[in-house]
Length: 168
Image 1 (cartoon, helix red, strand yellow):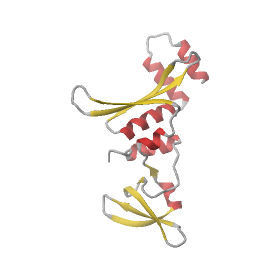
Image 2 (tube, one colour):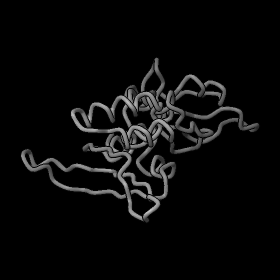
Image 3 (cartoon, helix red, strand yellow):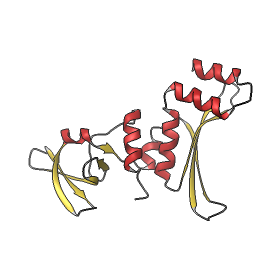
Image 4 (tube, one colour):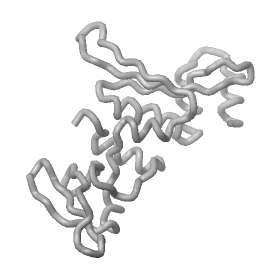
């Protein structure tokens, strides 16, 4: 599926704190034991279970809301972009060497001088994966940000940058 994130990315998002919504009809989720499924309508008169469909096997089963805790929400790019900061933009382009359509999501932060500073970027053929990559970079632990900044600026005086990252 090109409109949602992979199982691996869904798990990384969940572990990093991406919101896991209340199940609704039309949402995609990953079950660690049985794979990708789509949520259908609530079932029974008391609305206590959802009818779900596993496209990989063609099976439909009933699942209580409590059992969704073991699953990971598979967001679309739109779901992820709703959780982004105010300044971001999307670029769609063809890769130069292999003519594959790519998506880039750039997240920016407004500086005191009213400039925009890029703080995260995600690039992928799947727009949901590109958005997830940017969201994960925005929400990674501070220690990982410091390590990534150190690696990016190796051999450069980074004292000004590192001071901001360590304080922020």
